[in-house]
Image 1 (cartoon, rainbow, N blue to C red):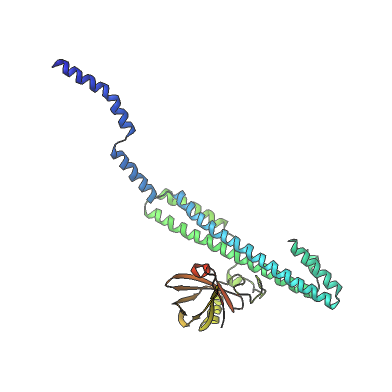
Image 2: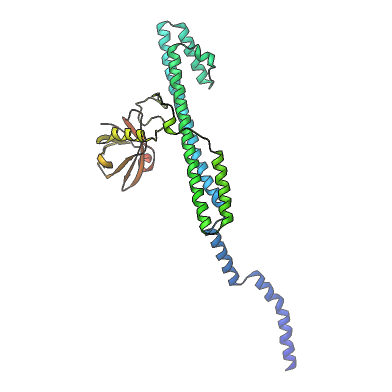
Length: 314
């Protein structure tokens, strides 16, 4: 009996390291569950830094879109200006106006080289060229102001989102996180550029910012003021338009009080600004962008954009 007990004790001593090693390699289920719960809590309640970074990334993405649009508008404006300069040059040559022809040629070369005339060169321009240049400069200013307005809107949205996050942290008694959000919010507010309100901005000229005024889907930057929105609404309410894609040509009617009727579907429409209308139907929603003269449009989002939908007023 004694020898048997000794044998068991010896085996227990021998097995102890093996058991310890197994436990080290395979932690108890309880520890695993606690770790999982901790990870879940961290995922549900990310710290302030992570949430701030997410909001900031969204703001930067919006501003990247603005930068792309601004470059597109400026390129279209330069193309328009170069075409107008070519027409002016041809006209001055036809009239035998050497001074006017030389000035138009020089300005066209500057635009091609992305160079700017000096104030003295502008003063020396013949009146016809000076007026054309003034229209171009007005278009540039309009594009710059629109980009600034949209960037400011993105920054203000970020501030509003941070304000909501700060309140959320405060209610949850996460005061350190709330303070971190407030610091970031104050920093952004201090760095925001100040641009004049819409009512304080100078009146804009009618110079086109992209392509010909009547070219389908081409238009200047949208005017988000109430006047701009009302003007588009009044221009298309109770009117019929073509709905063209590939070889298919249908029609769409923008009825009164936001009712929309297409040959194949019904829905609603809403003027968003001076150039854009949001339409909604059973298949989803899409944005239609109208040209400056409001005689043509093209789809810029949703399924209609994928189908290349465009149209003109009937």
